[in-house]
Length: 392
Ligand code: UDP
Image (cartoon, rainbow, N blue to C red):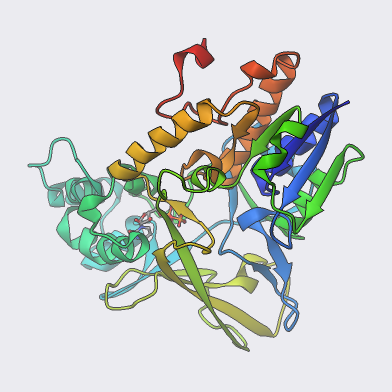
């Protein structure tokens, strides 16, 4: 039986490992350098309060892909959960994403949906035809007042730069609604696993053909001993940053603990520039089916990732994209290694997208099982410099 190495036990690695072990003729060795499974989706019970903590910040599972939703249900029970976020702004606390309640309360109006739509469109900057960046995108669609109160400060803190330097695509993640729907996501399915994400990953990896090496980083020098390697660590990290560092944002969480209810909602975003943090998450509210007298919250600060920091968000500005292309070229010349997941492909991916991509990748590999030289170099959409030869 051929041996495949998978570096990283986040969803990208764990789903791929499970699928290849279950449906292929492979033995899988999973290398996880941290002392826990699950990557940044890792959850653990807080020893002092028993609250289930999302160790790397809020993870709310949502997807419109029915196959992905059904797939995760096989590995854990999900509690019904709808993400409703509140925005703390200089002018008060409002409902997010911007919806009819936000608009009516913020402007002191009683609009119906079509009035609100007309009103917001009258606020938009018509001189912007094709928005070139985040700021222009926001000004064009919601105008200066909403932009400054809800987006400017949060975005500047989150990304560490002026929103005018950021791609418009980041804002497209956030809907604006002209009804009272305050569900943060527009996806079909949503929930949070009752026993947490790490239990799901443990189940994915509990397979007779999978061996997990915890606390063990995958060594590049070991590639030759495997039939193929799937790497879910950072693409630049794999190559020891030899061409320079791709930029990521990292997060710092400051813990608070008290009796009772701290903020009355799982997540409150702090949109004002005058507050140094981006948001606060109170984790017992992610599990409304549990009851706890005490509470734990984390105040979240964003920073540029430096050597040794946990990587969270790829930045993907134009200089990062140029460097990314060089790393993609390097990856193309690295035989027997494919790159997967948020860090391996340097894309801003949510859990459900990563899971979907690993399912698709596994299916592709199983169809091309005798021809590992044709296995995709990257999971998901083709990266900028991916060769035509490979696609052919
Ligand atoms: N954003 C904002 N104000 C908010 C929430 C989000 O300006 O209150 C912007 C910000 O630039 C952020 C982007 O919208 O990076 C996407 O938000 P999302 O909630 O998807 O970010 P995530 O939950 O992945 O951190």
